[in-house]
Amino acid sequence: MKGSVKSHIKQANPSLVIMVLMVGAASAMSSRFFTAANLRNVLTQTAVLAIVSAAQCFALLIGGIDMSVSSVISVSTIFVAMFSHSGPAGLAFAIALALAVGAFTGFVNGMGIVRFQIPAMIITISTQAFLKGIALILMPSSGGKVNQAFVKVIKTRVGIFSVAFLLAVLTYASAWLVLHYTRFGRRIYAVGNGELYAEQSGIDTKKITVMVYVLSGLIAAFGGIILSARISSGNPLVGDSYAMDSVAAAVIGGISMNGGVGTIAGALSGAVILTLINNIMNSMGISPYYQYILKGALLMFSLMLFQIKRRRTV
Image 1 (cartoon, rainbow, N blue to C red):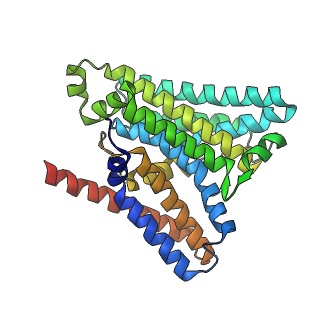
Image 2: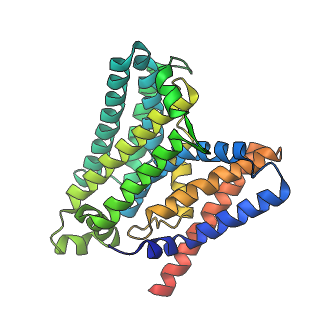
């Protein structure tokens, strides 16, 4: 799947156009939108959703979906809040534990799909519920204390960019390299374009599927670790919105839910679009309930657009 940067950006054009139009409209409606403070706020808010959307991107590209990312995020914030305050060793343990749980959750998801033929939606909702129960037992409500040195580092600003956003960019750069310049990435697209054809080409589709879900769990846990620093606590419900929002961001950004189509750049632009929706509507004093309506409408429109394109190419 090697290709030029230009070709990858071209695939994400619809979401990029939407993003540019939204920025233009927001700037016209409010002179405060293009201030350094607000732009920094938008980029910081985008960071975690962008990271989780990258995780979702891998699952969608093989024709799957990962709803467990929400609970992986919540549990990760709890681990950091429970153990990191004791010092560097506690922080390292918390991060390692969160990543291990994320990877293991992904492994369970992958094995459920390839070994027991459980649909991706069902197995990932099951692990989502399981982890949510553990999160609520460990911390029934928001609490704990995150290592303040860690919080300070994540919230550090480099111009209008926070370290959290720069880590999101690093995540995307790494994912882009993996997807487009490694054998593993090419096999992900091959599985998404047709599992049977991929198997006939000598690709171990079961192995690729398990690896993808392990990677998705790892990236989601990483997002939860970053989020814990942003909210400075653990929260058993803080990840709830990220499951659907990450799917919406990826699909709006051009990732096909049928698998095999789309680029990681599109998922990033989709995450920015959803964050802009929240930012613009909040600045206008519009009820958060209408944000759900607009997000749902964008997702439905993107899915319909995909189906129209698919029919034209068949």
